[in-house]
Image 1 (tube, rainbow, N blue to C red):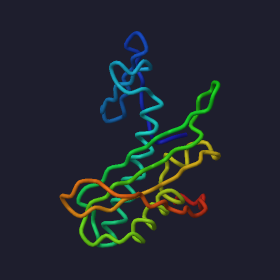
Image 2: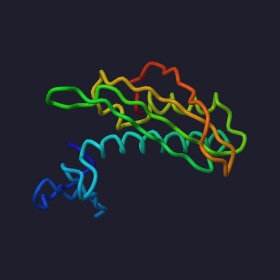
Image 3: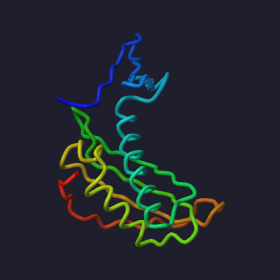
Image 4: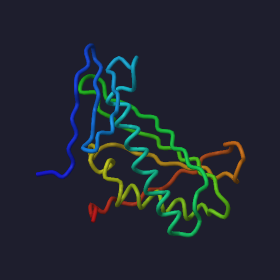
Length: 157
């Protein structure tokens, strides 16, 4: 059926350890005392997935990032099930010569075509990507530019 296998082991209380097929482990805690909750890890996975795409696209555009951070804020449905209803995804990107239109294109391609985590979430999730560009070695500052998203292609190939 699938080509990815993971295993989650209960460690007592609400603590779990996930392991992928190569043995890499992730600690999770429903009480967020010993690690992030599974829902927080889902948000991290969304940010990491989009970041991989943006880094790759910027490299292929010959304007590689020197540093990239993605901060995500998720809003959740009330009552149960508490799925994500909306997420703000803020990219901070450092690098020389990176143009805003290149970043906008990279984020759009990630969200509309490549990010398998985003495409695995509910279809009604409202995603708002934003970005700021910074010169190398400068502190993060300034206003975020909102990315007007294209329509998801549904073509993940």
